Length: 129
Image (tube, rainbow, N blue to C red):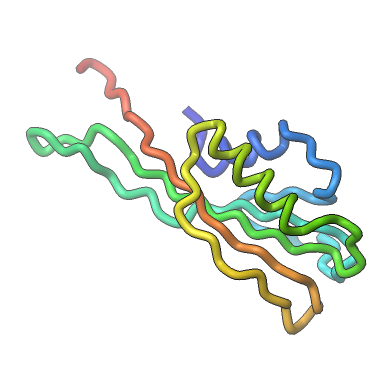
């Protein structure tokens, strides 16, 4: 089973949105163009608490994943519509949008940024049970 953060990364990658210039998981690598000339999407894991305890054994994991969008400064895209489309596509794949922060402007790059989180309960299969 792959990490939940990678599941969301691959899902977003498969959607092939034309407005995403760079897609990263876990961190933005050194040397990436962070000048504001590209729209960057960063997908990170927030928390993964265990649950469904029975007889001191967990049976599920609550994956909480954060999606950050750094819109390029000169974008011609409809930011709101694209963010809603991405959230809808994630929900169509059984990821619940659990929070959405207001868009802000990054003081260092003057980029509009968006942050929202998705969550999914993953049933954990244990060997030999």
